Image (tube, rainbow, N blue to C red):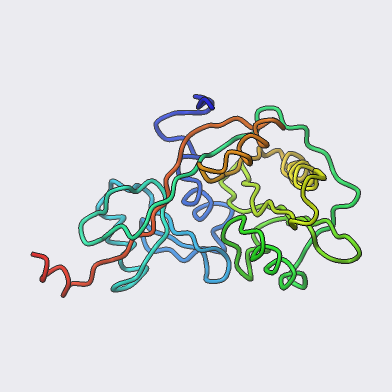
Length: 241
């Protein structure tokens, strides 16, 4: 795999998509203190800071999470003062450079009443974090077989001009039938109809998913890192001093 320089720049919006979403189209989902923000509980588990190199952002994030609180943030490999990295995961970000987007006649729009089925499918396939109100973040489409939800894809982060395709998953018994690809194309059709551009994320070690996305018209834009960080309480800091 090669990394494209497409749209690359010192401050491209996709370099910090959660912050761009939380301070833009998804502001109604945001809890924000200064230079730090997070999604409402049960919508998404993501936090964001305006600039991970700005000490003010970490002060604001500390106020947002509270003493000993944790936050899942992008772009952090070394802890800021007063914080520790609990664990880190590596991923990739891909952008649409040639995806054929088209509606699917079998795809149905999913809503709050479908959440129990969605959560069940997500628990069995593990496409990434999905909470009870994630369905409110954008359009989620599914394919049913004999009334049962067997495949899913939808919209998650929404920076201005872009929409992330996420929660792409298929029941193991129905894999190999192209259902995920069909749903990605169908979700992308809605995104492009709004004049926006699709992008997505995948785990860096998920070679099969990355290969599939590249084969249908996505291009690897950059490698990403996400870390769970914890605020160190004052008493612990004093002990370590």
